[in-house]
Length: 75
Image 1 (spheres, rainbow, N blue to C red):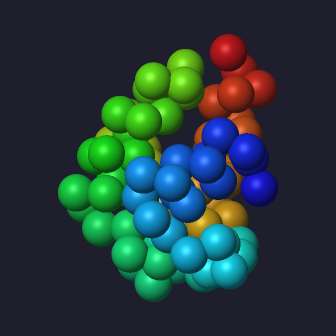
Image 2 (image 1 turned 90 degrees about the vertical axis):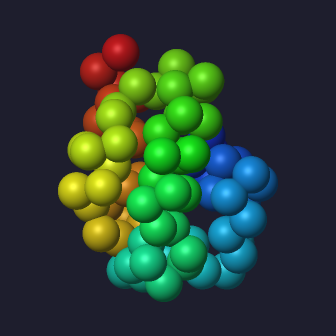
């Protein structure tokens, strides 16, 4: 998993590190619409500008990780 994403999820968003498996849904780890907005801001602070709508379009931890990796590769 991308270290920036893992640090944000397990730090400010307080997701249990054991729950960070690719197949687990974002809902199951406690990522709701408010957490998506916070995640978007925290990622932007790290130079990863994705947008809430795009983040909300993914449903699993693995898909979110891939989305972040794609944006990091493209910057």
